[in-house]
Length: 321
Image 1: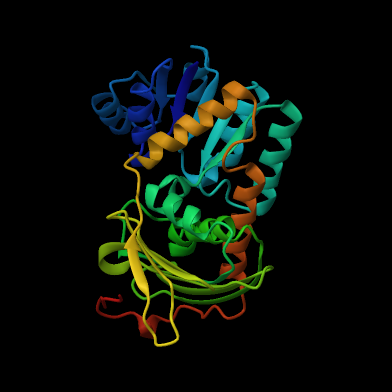
Image 2: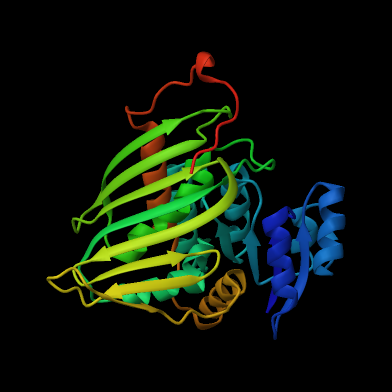
């Protein structure tokens, strides 16, 4: 299979690196208009680099990953779909729900595979949590995803950049749609929201919340799930998952560490995408799922509880855990 990557930023370059190492794959090249991006991608991934999409397509490709800026996803995805090229689109699938739905409809009509790049589903720690809650009556989910401000970010805030990962995880772990949103957002040091406390209720009655910000000086990625029989704690960075169970009336309980795999999430994701292409099966993260998570993220941004940014509130950087 002949594959390529659109966008030679940090994520796109990683896609190219992984593709280069996969068996039975020909990595045709990566596209980016910026010479410095093309140079870096060539050095890191060892692949050819092209300035335009047409140059890459002229070489012949069967499948592509789209890791360009989000505002370009719609245009690029439709161009690829029109050429019957299978695509994995990095999250979020598009800038708007309408654009996302148009991409999904076009892919369905053309009969090509469309997968959305919610790579956190392929984190071995998340897979262990998913396995641990299988068949359980989930009561609540709490997710923390914090870290320092990323210099690369300019056109979106923490909800689209970070929280959309966890909105997808909540929907995936509960296998239920989110029906209520209660967001609290703030712009402390950035032009867009850089602190978000998001509360949700799913159709199945699960309460969930996400704590995310760009003010914490270190990265933290933690998931806790409470069920009627278990309490599961997962660190998505260290990939340690602990399960508490066997609760007794006297307050005692048992605890154990769950086995967690060592796969690189991006590699697992791309293998899953290529398998869906080869076998003609539904991808692990469908276009409809990607659009559903985007829709919830946008609802959080449009919710009336969102405060207006105030110049008086801008001040010295504060650390939020």
